[in-house]
Length: 250
Image (cartoon, rainbow, N blue to C red; front, side, top):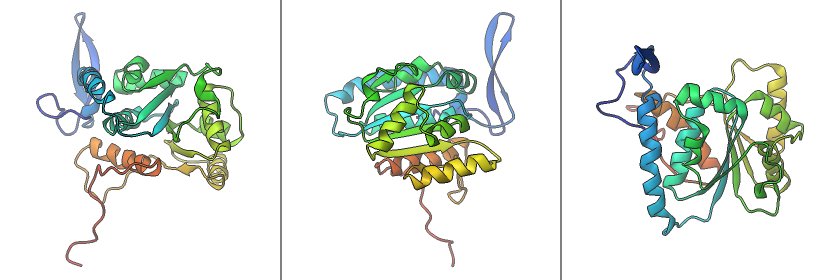
């Protein structure tokens, strides 16, 4: 749910909160990024809660997806994915790493509690006794978005020292869908080796590298490109951008 209209930032700008005589005002710099308008992000969260209550009684999907958010840039992908899953009446569980909390505040002007409001349930990153840590708990897929190289390396080596890593480990042993969305560049040999190993285990690697053939007009469009890829591979059909139809006139 990206906001447009009067509060949208002009092309060529990105919002930043600054202090001026004790009051907070929005200043725009560099590149258009309407989702980062902090006031608007708050409205997205609050407006969502009422919609969520109305949908609970008529939920038609039996799917459950775990969304993990780790300490890499790109928290907006997680925000958009959670909005999409909610709109599709998908049950969601959110787990946020400690570094991700800082990035969410910096990039979105939100707290992890704000993102928790978009989910059906949430657990603390250190709660290894949470129900979701057991293979006996039903969930269909786990998406780590964005996925830091540290988390990716731990997953590749089966190092489950927090709840999110444990949930991915459970998904692997139970042969459930795992989607990792790394946001790093350039990639060194260790990164590539870890991704190759995970791919051989059946993990889907979806780098946050959007295409441009759909002629995006905003960063919102670029974000949607990746979010649709994630949704498709966890088993949802959602068209967030126009698919490739070939070169016109050819």
